[in-house]
Image 1 (cartoon, helix red, strand yellow):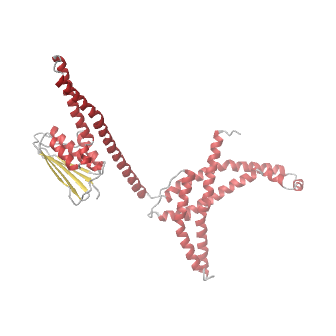
Image 2 (image 1 turned 120 degrees about the vertical axis):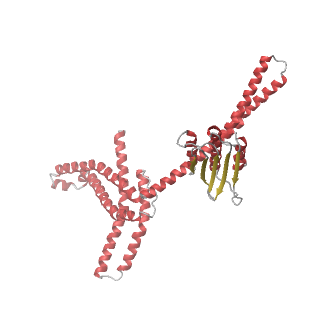
Length: 408
């Protein structure tokens, strides 16, 4: 039998909604039953009918209090399995809201669920009344000659009830889907803290992934394209040295190609160092910065103070950010710092902070809000939760201070 897709979807949705509501009945009414029992025990205490009532009342109160976490877990499972709504695990800050849900809202929802399921069962029974009639003895049908007309009206009523059940069930499910996560889940402050934690973890993962990708590109360029260029330069140099009987025009072409190959190797080496220097992984931040200072076009006074009592290195992402900050800063000083004759780079680790300070004696006037270089530095520092400060008054000096978190 082929069921039309629209009817199949409607039946699937109705089955899901009724299953969700049927599972909610015991979860919602158990607290209502406990509260009803507690009120009855309190009334017994007031009337003084039984001396054992206080003990039973205490047991009922303890059971009510300790049943709330289990009911919350069951409700979270019900929402997740049947509606696909994942309610985050709540903290302890909103326990009063959960008790209110189980004791007040839950009892009301349980009553509505019982009414709706009763309407469904009554509609099914009324819609199939002719089946029930033919199941009774024939003598009853003989004694009630007007039963067929009455059964027709009962069947119509049952069909009307069944037609109303899907819309009512969907409305009740929407109501519960709105109230459940709001009262059983974490509050706005907890949810915000959780989102911040998730974003922090995802950002750290993105930073690590980007750093790993830079390392991969650096390895590929160093082991692939750079080695091919070195081989090409060697072959051209060998050809220039051995092929002495070539015409002058051919020797000039070989000589020009040799120079271009060496220039390409130099540019590619600078690019590889800019992506991720291998010395940073092998020898650490001090050696990598020493190489930067040695290659700088102006004198650089470098001081790296890493306490010996902290033998562990900083995280690779933090060391990479510190290296690139110094590299970009020295490049900016060489290009844009007018009248600059030297630069000072100081790297210190103070507990859980790696502090990098770059200063020059130029004319100053650098504005971090102008130009993409300084903005890029600030964004790279913020990617690891660092702070970026810059002071560059007109007339100098210019000082850039970066603090990077370096957990112990």
